[in-house]
Figure 1 (tube, helix red, strand yellow):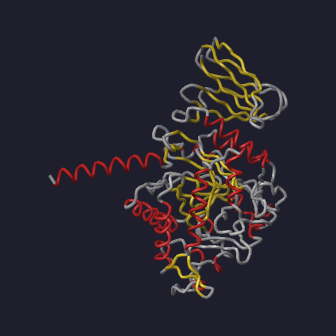
Figure 2 (cartoon, rainbow, N blue to C red):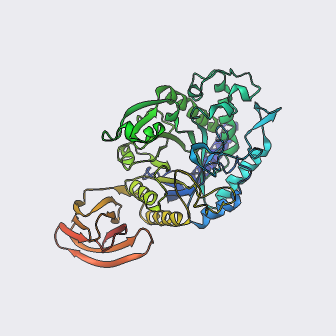
Figure 3 (cartoon, rainbow, N blue to C red):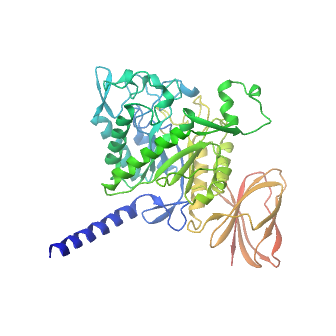
Length: 486
């Protein structure tokens, strides 16, 4: 009788656990390049502030989240305590990740101007929970970024530095050892911090964890020069050389990452919900070495479309979760988004520097910073999100096989169970000519302007041969066309 009762209780617990996890953000089972949330296929596209919404007490995140909701976007990235910046860092004039004096709140208690890494600041966690709850109510996913590189200059003032805490951490640990297994007693407090965050946030369905922001910045292996035709001398500042260098996290960094992902998984084994874990791979592109089975999202910064095609065979979500350093023009970042997502990417997050303290509505388009953003770009990214969401995500995949030669435009093409879609960036004002290789039959052809979201042209066309030519509408605006066999 006792055995039967235990069996019934175990079955009830298993059913409850399955139901809970079915509501959590996860990879789409039929097509894990995309996501599923509350049993619905989902694509993730956003344009958010510089990750300081919670730790910066001056930032009004109620206005911020309402703005993202009104703009129809669904992701924000959040640094949760192990890294922040000082005003002026990275050339950002009004930086939400760099609070003014007295406006910084972190997870640890402060005693006589030093942190105690074994005690928690409850006011921080109240603010964190409030933010996460309100993001969920607004339909916004939250990337929980646990750690970051320190970029040398950032290390002296951070809580894990032995000079800034009372926990007897050696004061001579260099910044490039912090996020490795060679960091002395820091590792113990990193584990305590990670497990605390996992327990605190396990209740939420709309989050995922990223282990570390830009791990290659502190501990990297340089793989190659991206463009052999650009020399270091041609770049105006030495620090700009990273733009022409493909760096990836070192092996010591990778080992530490796997330990941290293990803490997350181990802690969640004791809890009700299992969340996705992201690894920030590299700038630009890199063929990933798959060594950690706990990773479900592979995120890149300043990503090329090749970042997706090189890693599509992993059969996990490939993301582009930070933009910037490409000027301020909306066209630049809109095109980056379309190219990446039309290559099979599942997540795009623009770093929108028009969000600042006092401009939580994202209207600070004059903010001096190495990037762009603003209401116009957010509207354009919403068009991308809605367009992709309207396709059959369970069967959507990049496909070039139905394209022959294309004259006068760059193209990115995909196919789902119902339709073929082609994203077009015209090079010349005259119409692009697209040679198609598709089954004979009658097709509904729908042209959309990706800048305005308006339908340019809709009609039906009979293809009497497997190879025929499609001519785009005139104009230099970027376009997308959907062909659906009738």
